[in-house]
Each structure stands twice: as C-alpha cells, then as structure tokens.
Length: 228
Image (cartoon, rainbow, N blue to C red; front, side):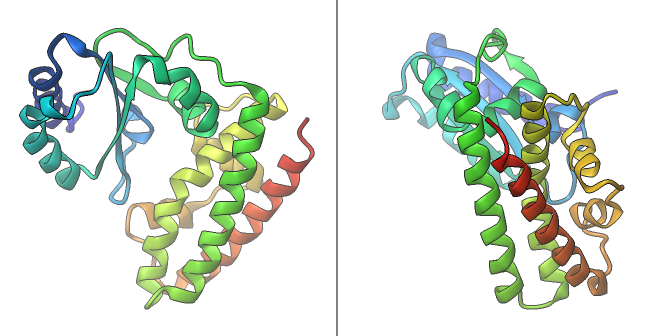
C-alpha cells in the first residue's frame, strides 16, 4: 500500500541530502507513521543521522523541513553517528520503540544493531511513566473544555503505548504493537483512546477516559517497580 506521506518525506530527504551531502548517513521514519497507522493527532517521527553537524550547512534543508514540521507534525531526532549509543541509553524507551517500528528512508539501517541496556530501559521507563502521570494530572486541571481534554489525552497516548510495549518487553512478554501492549495491560480494548487519537471521541467521554488513563498509568508504575 502506498504511504500517503511518501511525497512529502521524499522532499524532506532531498533537502537533507542537499544540506549535508556525504555527511548524511541515514534517514529513518519511526513510530506509528512507519506502520502507516498515523492518526489525526500523531506526530511524524523522523531520525536523521549525520557524520558531523555544522549549522552553516543546514540552510538547504531548513525551508522544506520547516514546512514538513507544520504539515506533517514532523518531529526530528537529529544525531551524529558517535552519539547513537549514548542516546540509546539516555532515551531507552524511545530507542526501543525505534527498534520495534521503523522504516529506512535513506541510507543503511543504522539502528538494527543498537543495544538498549536493560538498566537504562528500566530507569527511563520509571521516568517516562511518572512524567505521563504528572501530565495527566496537569491536563485534568488545565483543560479548558471536554474536547480539549480529549485532545490532550490523545497527545499522551503514543508515549503511554510505547511505555506499555517496553514494560512487557522487560517482563519478557512479546507484543506486536504498542497499542496491543497497552490493551494487554488494561485487560481490554481501549476504543475511547483510539477515538481520541482520531479526534472523534465524544466530549462527554473525555473525563472518564482521563480517569481510566490515570489508573492504568499507576498500574504500569507498580509493575515497573517490580522490574530488576
């Protein structure tokens, strides 16, 4: 199936090639967009790996990347090759997600051999879950209305699903997708969360969904605390 993002992503790759030339090593799409499961509120996550980064060489890519950032909600992860190992330790949950869901747009598959240390993965999972819990509480207090509440929950859903996949992976349970992982931990399907990500959740259902997400995140934190 043809990816509807393909033309725009091709332009981004062309701009990066013009900017970095031979120093551009790889461009990798990851997350839900790599699975062609991107939703209305989803980001388009792109990892760019270069041999060296010089600000004077970025002008050729700046305009096309800026437009893609707006049109596709594109988020760039820009790394030098010598930073990959440190980044995998510092952002273990994200890199585990990259290993599970990625599509190479340019160059070699530089993430195929990346090893995420278990200790770093556990520590970062704790941090990510606590951050999600604090953000959910903030959303409850600061959302202007129920529709805004639903959108705010949707923006956190991708991170929670990635945490669920990492939690099950660390527990030794294989899952096919982060969505499946979160539903496995919840013990049921989560149609309201999928509706929130598609921006089709009835406003009246937002408060109940938030309560459910808080409870689920707290349950995940309890399970993460048992990891060794």
